[in-house]
Image (tube, rainbow, N blue to C red; front, top):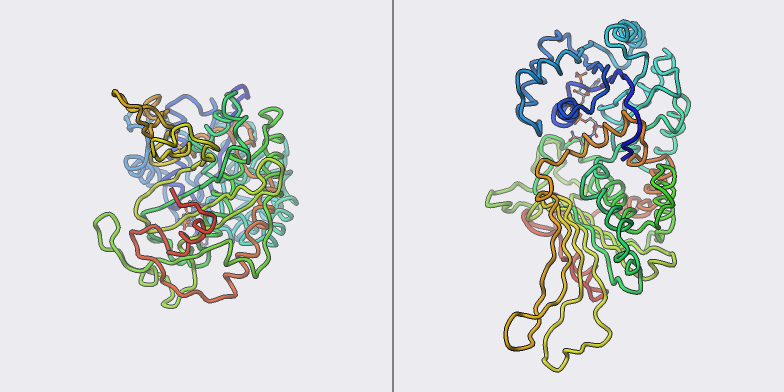
Length: 492
Ligand SMILES: NC(=O)c1ccc[n+]([C@@H]2O[C@H](COP(=O)([O-])OP(=O)(O)OC[C@H]3O[C@@H](n4cnc5c(N)ncnc54)[C@H](OP(=O)(O)O)[C@@H]3O)[C@@H](O)[C@H]2O)c1
């Protein structure tokens, strides 16, 4: 987020460089930053993997994947420049000698690329390896300079509050908090960042932004895809941990936070933690009243027959894992008292669509009541993906001789302003290179977010659900409709 910080020469060390995330997101992001002239003058990407690959083989593999996943077209000139900054290095995660060899290699590369020992470690690897890698980095002094070395950790960060606390403690043995970048790629999305600009860069919205004018807030992240090849990972995770504990709660924080005094990362992160702390904690016997879980059965998604979750590869026949979760949160603070925040997410839903709806209260008295017209209350919709726009819905007069009203929309379309929008990972990697922590999660943010979902997590672990309970290609289980209807609301 900070434009005026300097990019220092850096070696980027990717653990898990042969994996899915690296090929689909990380290398394309670095490539696009390189083309845009946003990489440091001196940089080198050291790609770590277990296989005995040659540099040439690995670079060809990256090039093939860039053809599929890069935002910008690959030209031979750009590729020739970029590939010169990649070094493949064979490495075993659990062997100390491998880290010592890596240390030696990094020193050699520093002289070639002028990277002066600045290191950015990217752990693009399963969460169970984080402690091993962190310990080895400490033991071999790979990250010895708290001012110049940084580490990026992928989600999931722990699997519950206790494990997150333990992981934070372990990382703290090697890294200062300011060196740790816990990534939540939703925070890098253009439309999510725009929430701050929209709320705090205008004078007309913020005065309406509270319980006096807003009736409810909804956040939906619906996916068309199922678990694809990640069945065994998802089986241990579920929608609550995979999406709500991180992405949806972070979006909620952006919508609900108090105005920060400045754009300093500490200030913004403090305001987000305030929101998480204010979310009402519920007891285990209230879980069914506040939360709904679901798992998809077979159905049709986008005209294509879809298997039930329990028929997917790596999934138990009697799986108790939720592929859908909806939760009603209340924030116990002055601004948001009694305003429900409904969040929901699911796999194999009717369509891929992530959006936020701010539902304003209806008019206290309608001047138009005699004409028996239904007036829709104002609504603000922030589309995150695939649409990327902000829509304000209001009533206007229908052109003509009679005074008839109709709902209309005013739209700000991100695409119309800039078709070629940077991917979230580009934004976040650039921020990490610049040393800007604003869009990354601080240790207390992660722990509070786990605390918010703790009781739901425990109740769902202990209680067996009657799954499957929604058809693939729908909008989730019936109970999620009841969750909002109890308050006289409905999902948008
Ligand atoms: N993929 C995504 O879309 C996505 C999205 C959000 C977050 N994430 C997170 O990003 C991280 C990486 O995800 P990913 O999908 O890229 O993972 P992945 O493809 O399953 O694995 C990454 C790399 O880990 C190494 N590896 C796997 N098992 C290993 C083992 N037993 N011992 C040593 N190395 C092993 C492999 O490298 P070598 O065989 O070359 O050593 C593999 O290429 C995870 O924490 C994931 O939760 C991923």
